[in-house]
Length: 109
Image (tube, rainbow, N blue to C red; front, side, top):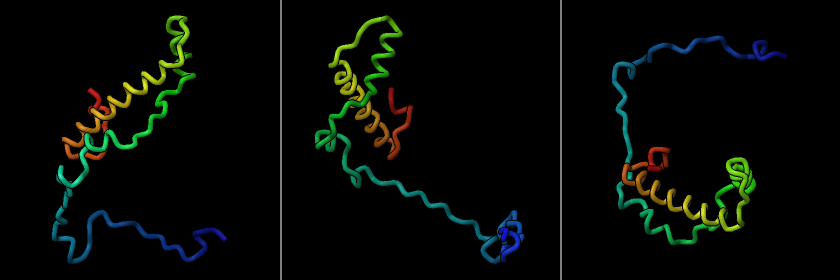
């Protein structure tokens, strides 16, 4: 049985709203959380944040090898991960200052 053979109805959605509520405009509500409502990024920075490696080590080593032919020591990934953490913390502060909960590329300055 095909879907058109069953009880499906062929109808097209109206281009404009119909009925009594069509003439009243819908009020758009924007909810922004106050800076006091969400925990500060700075306050949560030192809580149990994971200290995992934030870079793909094999890709990093391959990139450096292709770039200049050098080898990469094991502690480079930890050092880069720490830099990435600091960048993310700064970006999250900028997003919070703008009243957003989404970190965007523009937050990384």
